[in-house]
Length: 90
Image (tube, rainbow, N blue to C red; front, side):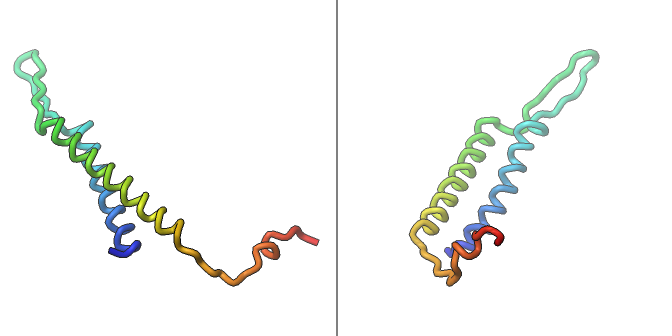
């Protein structure tokens, strides 16, 4: 997989992660009223949703680490003088 492909996949995984976090916090229960009593029913197993969130977070960490590691060993010859670019005004 190329770095660009991995970055694209990471973007999609981040979106999915946000969806699951919303699911965990907002719509994971259904509320209804029976007479004066409020009843809350879980719609998803909280542990299963949390496990999937953790898996996606671990993937993002591993992918980010791999990209940073590849950048750490890749040298780029830019062909410009940094001293000249950062020189003060005369």
